[in-house]
Image (cartoon, rainbow, N blue to C red):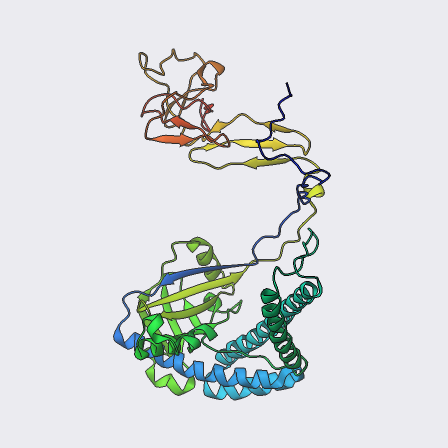
Length: 435
């Protein structure tokens, strides 16, 4: 009779083959927060005049952005403050100083992004060439290890991979030559949408529909914010009540419907997400960047607001946990904090929110009980005081449809009816100012 091993039959380990080792868990660290915020809302109820003005401004500024990007790519590493000033001066005569600043900054960012992507593509090609070279150098059928792959399984696969190595090597040489010559390949509007033009049948698009998307992607309707100016942006201004006004370029100043060459849209913007944060910024005249985008597929206009968060220096995890930390789960109507010292975890008594502490249950109900003499009265009625006898320690066996999830336990508790006692894990506390 043999002792049970707990292994499945037929899954016995090989002779001297070592067992697989689990990967080690990385040391925890403090992750930095997001560097910016972006929110979006739809521009509804636009009149035909509004859309015509937006299209005219987008086409005009888009043509200027394309020409400026071409000049920036031609400068390459020879770019300097003098060339930047010359480009901005030429754009100012055809738009405005702030539109020119937004266009030149967008060109710089796009060129830098293309340069970084080019370097990442070169590194990816180099990794592929190294892997193919290594596997082609091994005998056919040789097995690999955890550290390196083995040889190919057949001569046919070996030959196909050798042709693949020749193609990758040729592509790598071209990319390296472009990198040394500071040549980047940028497509305003997107390379994927450009290639869709040759496959309209597969994309189920007509030439007119594709042309609308292509032109909409190449428009330029974005303006950087400026702190200290009215509502944080002088080019695309959005007031706290949702009014949108645009500073028109000089050639389109005749389309203005208000003073100072501005056009006010009939649409009103109401940010449902982070609207209070945005309103606080524009009220304090802090910088907010805006971008107007047209979704040609849906026929809708959108406005996106974005701003940067102040940089916060991340401290080491050991320093953050030196004096102990407290985590609070702000679930519905209760605040269950949990304290931690780094080596052991202790739970603090879960306490109900003072704003939703229920009244004591009537006598004779399921949760009935004799009110304690220490029962106090708050501004909104009697408040049940914390008492060990009034705290449940286990949930009902069959929860109802209306449930409240316990924090951290994954259990569901029956929600008490109006006028009854609180659930088990609540310990009611007197409201502020109660007797």
